[in-house]
Length: 163
Image (cartoon, rainbow, N blue to C red):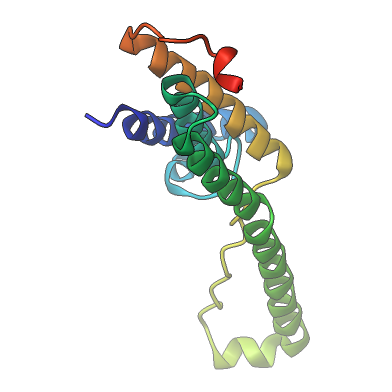
């Protein structure tokens, strides 16, 4: 069994599941579609890659190539989740607003030509920085718990592996 990969995948599932009660607390509505959507608190992207890197750090040490690879990969994923994807989402909001403005300007004559309203583009694509940090914190916790549950005795202490 690939314990680090399983840890990351289960953490992603946990992060997605946590989005439902968090959204309920924010909006007072149960929005179950949040389970399969991107964006929101906590970032499942950040949670998964951080759980992987944490587990690898504890298993192999922070001076290992495995930890270096998982960390660099994780940083790229987190940057993308809150940077590029978030910007795309903000651009989509503007496109949807322009579409709504055009429909208002066209007025009733446009409504008669097309009875069906145009479909809005999906706006929630990326994460706010605090959602990325929340996911990373969840990942550190689950990575540590998963490693602790293996019951392995460490050959050297974690602090020694920093060098």
